Length: 196
Image (tube, rainbow, N blue to C red; front, side, top):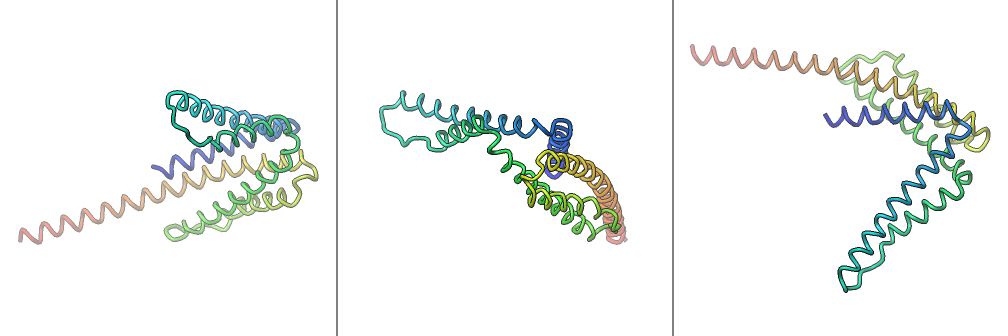
C-alpha cells in the first residue's frame, strides 16, 4: 500500500508541475519560487513563535532556534530575489527529471524478474533522462524552452508511471493469486494424505 501512495504522489506532483510549466513557462518559475519562499517564511516563523512562547513560560535559558531563523531568512531571500534563484531552480528541476528517468529505468529493470518487459517501455524513461541531462547542461540558455521541455517531460513521466504501475501491479496481483491458489491446493492435498 505504501508503494501505491508514493507512486500516486509522484504522479500527481509531476502532472501538476508539468501542466503549470507548459501553460505559464514565463512566470511559472517565479511563482514556484515565491511559493517556496513563503512556505519557508511560514515554517520559520512558526518555529520562532514556538520558541518565544516556550521561552516566556520558562525562565531557563535555551539556545536560539537556528533552523527557524535560517528558514525565515532563506524564505525572505527567495521572495525578494526570485529571478536570481530561477536558474538554480531550473537546474534542480532538471536534476529531478534525471532522477525520475533513472528511477523508471530501474523499476522496469527490476520488473524483468517477474514479467517480460518489451524494449519499447524503455523509450519514454530514456527520453525523460535525456531531457533532464539537457536541462542540467543548459539551465540558463533558453529558460522558457527548458521549462517547457521539463513540463512536457513531467507529464510524460506521470502518464508512463501510471501506465507502468497499472500494468505491472495487475500482473503481480494475478501471479500472487496463482501462487495462493497453488499453495492452497498443496495444503488440501496434504490434508487428504494425512487423513488416509
